[in-house]
Image (cartoon, rainbow, N blue to C red; front, side, top):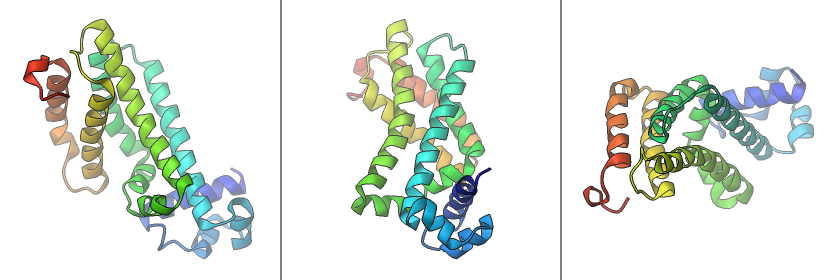
Length: 200
């Protein structure tokens, strides 16, 4: 692992668990065994380091989802949606620090004034939503999903599963206890007739 990779790894862990504001560059330097000047040499500022951490989260999310899609032989779009919902919860455990960082308040505060940070956060969430959207679209084609607005439904599905992931991240509730209900709700949204829904 290079010095730069060590810094990124430590930054993800510390920003996620302590928070961005409460993590000093001196602490990052100590955790990685490098001088503070080395951090600034590679990243320029602590904010730039956060942005690079977010880019890494996006790359890892895409890689994991693409690998999952490639390994699974889903019989239908509906089955794929259900599989992706389960995989998202699984991934929130595998990438615990990344999800904890995404669930912290500071990146969104920074995004209000930093367009690059906003772009990075939007790119991460768009990746998640696009995986669900493609699965919904596949279901529309194969007949396993009713006539729905693919993007909007994908966003609703993502919101449901991300809410469960937040419960899991913060140990507020047993997310697994609600998994079956989430799948049942998703199935109802995706398969009910248009007249049974309120314009989803």
